[in-house]
Length: 368
Image 1 (cartoon, rainbow, N blue to C red):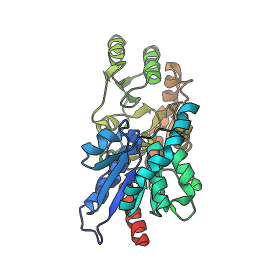
Image 2: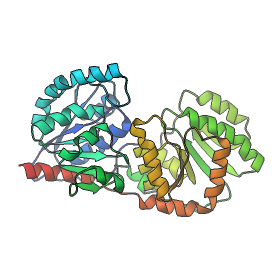
Image 3: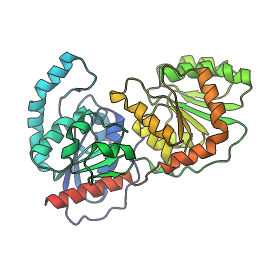
Image 4: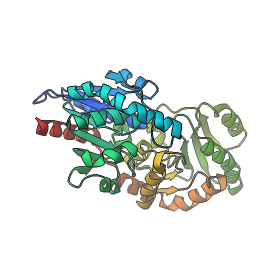
C-alpha cells in the first residue's frame, strides 16, 4: 500500500487531546494509522504509537516523526501450536505493560493485527474508548474479538459493518494518497497499457504468469505495452527474459511513483490487499486481482470478491493464474474497461483519515 491521504489544514482544537495508535506488522496496518495520526496532529492533538521492533512500524512511524513505544508480542492466527502457546503466555504481561500507555490516552485508534491486541485490551480494561478501522472485507482476528466492545468502527466495505455493533459503524473507506483520486479517465487507445505489480517485494506467481503470457500475446498479435514491477529477488531474470520477448514495455524492481504508474495504465494486474483495492477504487482502474492465498483469514479473496461483485475487477485464484488465463481475461475485459473503471471509482471514499480523526475526537469528547 502507499502512504497517506491528504491532511486537512491545521486548526487549533477546542481541547488538545492525546491519542494512542495501535496496530502494526505490515504496511497495510501502519500506513493508514499514520495518515490518521497526521490528521490529528494537524488539528493540534498529540499522538503516539505502540508497535514491535520487527514490524514495519519500527521504521515507518519514526520516519513520520511520531513517538513509538515498543512491545514484544507474536501472532495467534495461522501460527503453530508452540508459538500460539508462547504468545498466550506472554499476553497478560504485555497487556499489563501497555496499561500505563493506555492510561495516557483519551481514546485509542486500532488498525487491528496482533500488535494491536495488548494495547486495545489495556484500553478496554481502563474504559478508554476504542475506534477501529477495518480495511478488509472480513475483519482480522483482533478486530473480530473486540468488535462488540468498540466505541466506533470505520470499515472499508459495506458488508463488513455486519461484524460490528449497529449504530457504531460507518463506511469510511481507507486513507489513500490524494494523487490516486486526481487520476482521471483516459481515452482507450489501440494498444492496451498493462501495469503488473505484486507489491514492493514482488510476487513469484505473477512474475511466472507474465513470463508465460508474453508468448501468448505475440501469437495472438495483441497490441500491448507492459510495465512490470517484479520485486528485487527476480528482477534480473525477468528483465533479461523480457528483453528477448519482443514485447513493448519495461521491467523494474520497484515503482516509486505508483500513482503515476496507475495513471498510465488501462488495466492493473495485482494482489488484493486492502490498500491496493482502495487505490484501484480511488484511481478508477479496472483490474485483474490474484489474491495472495496465504493471507490471514483469506481476506484478500474476500476483498477481490467485493471488487468483482461490484463489476470493477476480475478475480482469478493464484493456483489458476497463468499466461493463457490472463490473455483470455484481458480479451473479455477490453470492451468493458470504461464501465469497469466507473464501477471501481464508485467504491472510492475520499476523506477516510479525516473521518477517522472526527470519530476519535467525538468519542474522546463524549468520554470527558
